[in-house]
Amino acid sequence: MRILHVITSLETGGAEKLMVDLLPRMKELGHNVEICLFDGIRTPFYEQLASTGVKIHSFTDGEEFYNPLYIIRLIRLMRKGWDVVHTHNTSPELFVAIANLFVHTHLVTTEHSTSNRRRNWKWYTAIDRWMFNQYDSVICISDQSLLNHKKQVGESCAKNACVIYNGIDFNKYKNAPPAEDVRALSKKIITNVAGFRAPKDQPTLIRALKHLPEEYHLCLVGDGERREEYESLIRDLSLTDRVHLLGWRSDIPNVLAASDYVVMCSHYEGLSLSSLEGMASGKPFLADDVDGLREVVADCGVLFRHEDDREFADAILRLEKDESYRNQIIEQCQAKTYGFDISIMVDKYLEIYEKIQNS
Image (cartoon, rainbow, N blue to C red; front, top):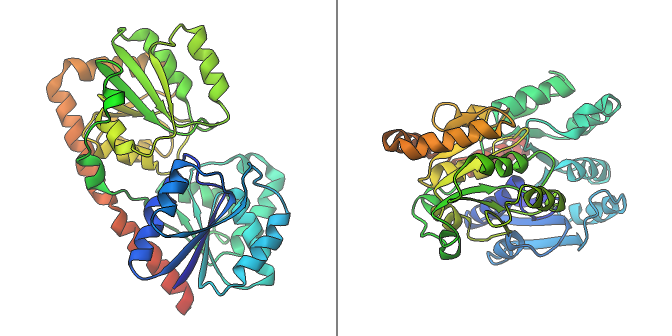
């Protein structure tokens, strides 16, 4: 099959990481797979994907995600005989749906979260319903994501929706050697891997350090528009020596291996790849009790109340003091991630493509 994926960029994020893991595996199975980026900034994810031989089409090197001129460029690109065009994120979903009025190819999209800002705009519901009706299949990455999608657009509009869980390369995270620069930072390392964006809640983790002994340091892997806000909070709390902003890293398995605890803290999630990677790493995994994290973590990892920095700190200290409990959490998390192998996800995506082609 000839498959084109369309996404805003390859900056740090779960959907972006999925492209790096998913597309090369489809290519290895003999499919012609390419990707279109609205913002072609050359990030570590970009370089990693390019190194696999997957062809990358870029519209700009800036952060213009909603330029309507992209529709014209999409029409030209989509006329090159794709069997399936698969979109990720809001602007690609909408612009590809519009472009397809002039092309008429099979469309698939993935809803990567349990929520989005559009759902707060009642006037946008009609646009969402029209847009999703242009797609042959809508893939939701968790049960809660599907439920919320149905609430937004209605059962009849969501009849083409299904659930396919995200996947990871389990062994890559289980057996990684530690990153020496991270391990050298302190005796106790807590690591969070997430973009510095509105849905994430790194400030709770930063504040939690005030409740932990000096030997505990926090590593924030990622970057984004909230960086200055985080830097200001770190200075205000006098934590500049204990919070490390590591930026984008291409060696996430090694960073996790060098950590003592891995945490995901968000206001909401889809099915967080970073969480699955953290659970597979052989380190105790913690997350706050919100949609998209609760479903994955509740029966294996440690949940703490949303925005409760004190409870998070207490959870860390309990894990530190109780070795049996800590080992139990590690074993449960690794056992859970066995069911999220990326090969399963690839097979299910390809099944969707073949089904809509043959319909």
